[in-house]
Amino acid sequence: MNLSTRPYRMTARAEAVAETRQRIVAAAVALHFERLASDISLVDVAAAAGVSVQTVLRHFGSRDGLFAAAEEWATREIERERRSEPGDVPGAIRAIVEHYELRGDGVLLLLAQEAFQPFAARLTAQGRAMHRRWAEEVFGPLLPAGPDAEARLDLLVVATDVYTWKLLRRDRGLSVRTTGERMEMLVRAVLAQPSG
Image 1 (spheres, helix red, strand yellow):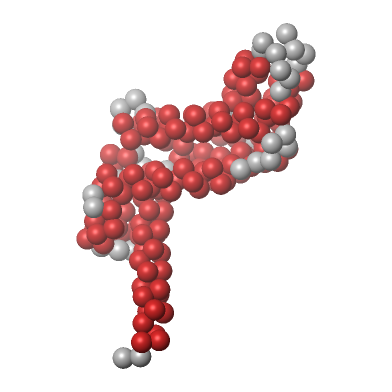
Image 2 (image 1 turned 90 degrees about the vertical axis):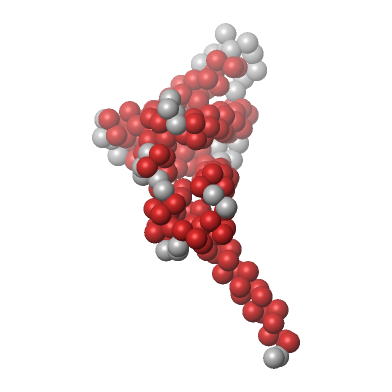
């Protein structure tokens, strides 16, 4: 055996293992945006990832282990998708609308489960906290200091919330562009209010 090829084979194997793990996690996340959490089995995840249930268990140990890894991966992906420069209102609106176009319907499905599904409740609580941090980071530099700063932040969270996107995009049937324009109007109206 040629020892010089051994590190290459080990690297290739490690990359294949990591790619399989990533595919399984991505399949689990995608299914959570399409179905009730209680309706997702390891068989479903394995089929979507193109692997066996035994492979899923070898990587994650259990359904709970898989869902924990999926939660961690989804959090990183969502933070990446929503990333915006502080103070850039048009860029922030563009990022949040693109994020909702990609994941908004799935987020609404998770929100519909939060009262009876602990996994969904944990994810939606994390999502609310993440959204508020995002609004504070992005719009904070534009908020005037004063006693109403917290109230303004509340309104900015509402103006950019998934339910606001749903009302405009799904319920009203507005285009992506018009939805973004209306959300930006809301944000600018909050920011333009004189301090009270």
